[in-house]
Length: 304
Image 1 (cartoon, one colour):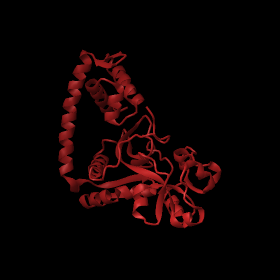
Image 2 (cartoon, one colour):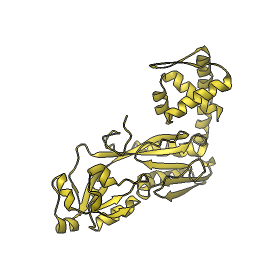
Image 3 (tube, one colour):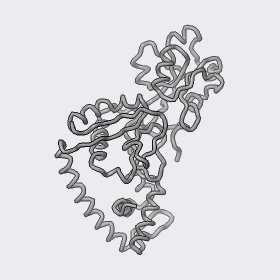
Image 4 (cartoon, one colour):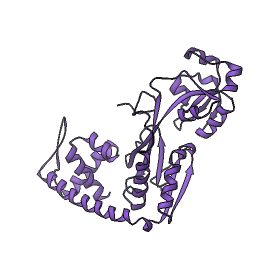
């Protein structure tokens, strides 16, 4: 285990006082925060925190460690700033994994990043399965839906998008437009199957499982099938609004919003190339139009 990762976790916990707050700031699983502290106390052979019902209070040694870690963090930040300003020095390959259509969100940021760092090669792997960051299948996994819960992953929010149930006009001309949930029993559906085995139209809208005509493992295939008039299915509201032949039915208020996360393995998270890319795309995300805060009610998102 990386000593600096343990020290940085302890530093943030000492400042914020609760495992939950520290986990949120660091982008770590709560179990990882606790494990870092336990390992660091064992490594240093001293008690760094007093645990109590409302949180963690640093001991004298804990306060001393916080001071040392903050000094080290400042020095690393200064070094990182120098590296950031030396953009042409960045080089190497960076592997990203994501759903195919999710890359549309990143396309402008990817273009500007490659222009800024011409010696960096980006490999974009579009796939639906959950890749294993521990074995190096990707450097950054772009996840849609629940926050990645793997204990050794760092997960940072990137953006969110709203979804709605929609169909093509050619489908409605033949099958009519449902005006109430009960009428979904008389319609066909195009569904995306999650890695968990669940189906999006069933999870979000309660569509009858037996009425699913087409099952897809990627949003692009679902988009094409819905646009061909095959059935009703879930689409991003921006896609619905941009195509006059598509129409949303049974809209929810507020709409269902799905978050997008940038996940890295904690051992690689602070490497210069990964940090530069994450910083670049998150700065870009601030320019995207805000849709809704998340999480919202949805069986697809973790509930506190």
